Image 1 (spheres, one colour):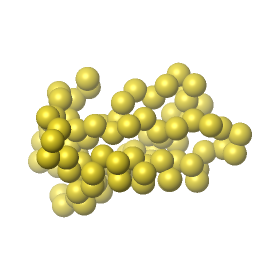
Image 2 (image 1 turned 90 degrees about the vertical axis):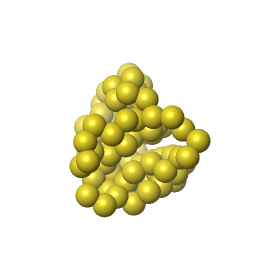
Image 3 (image 1 turned 135 degrees about the vertical axis):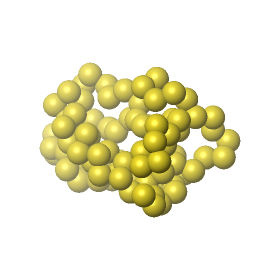
Image 4 (image 1 turned 30 degrees about the vertical axis):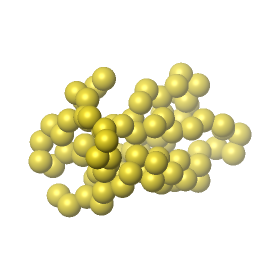
Length: 88
């Protein structure tokens, strides 16, 4: 699958902007930062998010939805980063 390469900052900006549009007005939660991970397979993205803070428990489904769509469309391009094992 062809994904659009974005720097971690640009990916974070896109994720954050979409989440802010969907979250409740009273919520101040934010999306965790994305980071580069080892690709598990040719159809998998090369990034994941840091841990969602406990304060975001009520927003977790919205964050998961935003991230799920982004995983299908974007890869992280960061020539200075070393990928870590997925899940860390």
